[in-house]
Amino acid sequence: MKIIDSIKEMLGTKLKRDIKRPYFFWDLLRNGFLDVRLYIKHSNTLINFYQKDKLEAQLYKECHRIEKGMSLSEIREGFGIAAFQTILQHLTDLEKIDPESEAKEYAGAVVKGYLELHREFEFDDQLKAILDSITGMSPGTRSGAGTIELTRAQLQAGSRGTFEQLVACRHSVRQYRPEKVDVGLLQEAARLASRTPSVCNRQAFRVRFFNNKERVDQLLRYQSGNLAFRSEIPVVAVISVDLRFFEGAGERNQAYVDGGLFAMSLVYGLHFVGLGTCFLNWSVRHDVDKAFRKVAFIPETEVIITLLSVGNLKETFKVAASPNKEFGDLFQLIED
Image: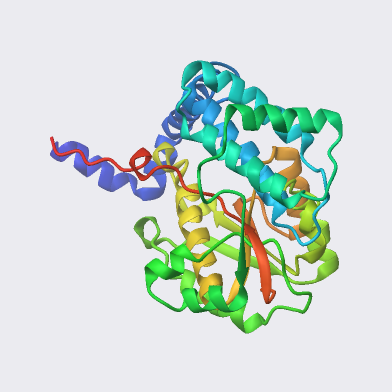
C-alpha cells in the first residue's frame, strides 16, 4: 500500500486525472445508457400506457390545459375541443381500471367550471356531446378545480405573512399589467434565491432576466405553452446551471437538482416582492434548445432548466385552481 501511495503522490493530480479519463468516459456512457433504458421502460413514451398512474397523469395534464385556458385575460369561447376529446378517452380507459379514481372527479369538476363560464354560449354538436359524456361519467363533485378569482392585495398580503401563507397564496399567474417591472424587485428576488442550497456549495445556477418586449417575444416563440398570453408577458427569466461545476457519472443529473431548487426559491422570492410568475417548462429537443441559446446568449456550458414569465399583478385576475392530489399519495413514513 505504501508503494501505491508513493506512486500516486509522484504522479500528481493532473496526470492521475489523465490516466482515469477513459474510465470516466466509459462510466458516464454506461450510466447515461441506463438512464435512457429506464426512461423508455417506465415513462409514457413507448410502452405500458394503459396503467392507472399513467392515465391519471395524462388526465391531470389535459384538465390543467382547460384550467389554463379559463385563467386568461381574453378567453376564446368554445376552446379546448381537442383536450376534451383526450379527456373523454382517458376517462373511458381509466373507468376500466379504477372507477373510483379521484382524477375522474377532477375532470368532471373542470367541465363544470367550463360550462359555468360558457352559460351564454351555444356549443356545436360535437363539443356538446363530448362534454355531456364527460359529465355523465364524472359528476364533478371534487372542489377546488377550475379557476380562482384573486386580487393583488390578497396575494401581496399572503406573501408577507407566515411561510404557510406565502406557499398557499402563490399561484401561476398568466395575467399581467403592461408597465415595465422594477429592476430592483428582480434583483431583490434573485438575491433571496441566492441562498438556495447546492451540492458542496458550488452555486452553479444562473438567472437571466429579459425585459425588452421584442426580445421577450422572440424568446417565447421557442416555448410551446405561452402563446395564449404571450402578448401580456413583460419579462422572461431563464434559469440555467453551469455544467463545468460537476464531474463524473454520479453527478450527471445534479445540474437539474440544483437548478430546480434555485428555480423554486426564485419563484418564492418574486412572489415575496409582489410580482406574478408562471413556470414555462423547457422540455424541448436539442435543435430547439440550440436555436434558443443563440437568441438568449447562453453558452453550451450551461444547461437550461426552465423559463419563467414575470410581471406586475393586475388589481383582480383569475388563476388556474390546480388542485393538489391527496396528501397520502406523496407522503410516506418508513419506520423499519
